Image (cartoon, rainbow, N blue to C red):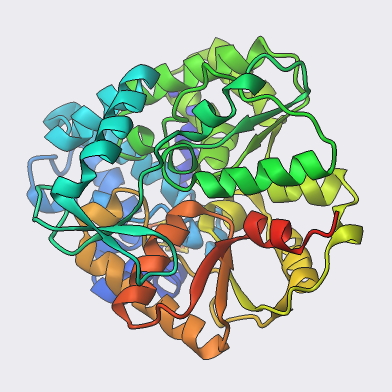
Length: 419
Ligand code: SF4
Ligand code: SF4
């Protein structure tokens, strides 16, 4: 492992400030579930003082949302997320991956297999799911318990045609703006991608949708599966490197953060200098779509107030990983009657597979967010991440708040646009 990564866990002075901000610690009230505990555990594991056999050690390292709230609060810049990611890699080196994460990695590495899996899942979804039209967005509800989902869990509806299939004609475009939808927008929330395309068309901005793009690798990287993450990262970096583009608008904040920040860390860990350099070069081109509209267009002049009553939730990978918090608020305030909720930047509790592996804790964390949304008196919860939309649509439903609609910032901008 690259020595530059050692400093990440040498910096913790055990002050305990992270205990006051960690959403998981707030629910679990147990030291191993907080940054300081994760750091101590990893140090002991690296020194060989404890092994990976203990079920608890494995559990403690996976029961973290990687929300980076502790990293933001830490006076010593301890990078708990990096430490946890490396520790998880150590865990799977010794114990391997759970079966569903192995299958997931296989599917994510092959676009044809993914298209096939989602197309068939959409066709046969009625066997396992029923439509739930009460929620703020079209959802499917599980009819039976499966190894990864309990009965009654809500997931987004699956699109008949993926975003990339819908916009396949743009794959050969010579435009200097490339679009990277991310898997959730590509296969489920395609309407969010449609909203961005509609905005770009209204502004006469040309774009391309590179057809060879693969999953960014975040779901496998966060599981500690660095080998499959590196496979996906290399494919995407080679693709982007060969395109004559100025920007890659990455619609999912988690994918953007993965490509911008985590690819570099991954190749540092693997001591792959060639791809570390490629990752650093591409990182400069990655941009969030709302940030792109804010920095490089004059769209603000064409936004009218829709008079919707809104509040905003900061996605972790947008606010903390990309430092984007004012730009969405600027547009939302222009487009609606906005009221700031309490703890707007507190994690929603999704955390990718955290919401599958630790369902009860995940929903408890979401419940606190729901109370803050209710208290804002908004009719629309705006956010910039479709994983947060999925988590909070379900949490609002479980609390009887289906009247509060979830909407992506891009959808609100599109609604308010007068051109
Ligand atoms: S991770 Fe940071 S905030 Fe937490 S105990 Fe260590 S130094 Fe303090
Ligand atoms: S990343 Fe989030 S969940 Fe994990 S220890 Fe830090 S604050 Fe807690």
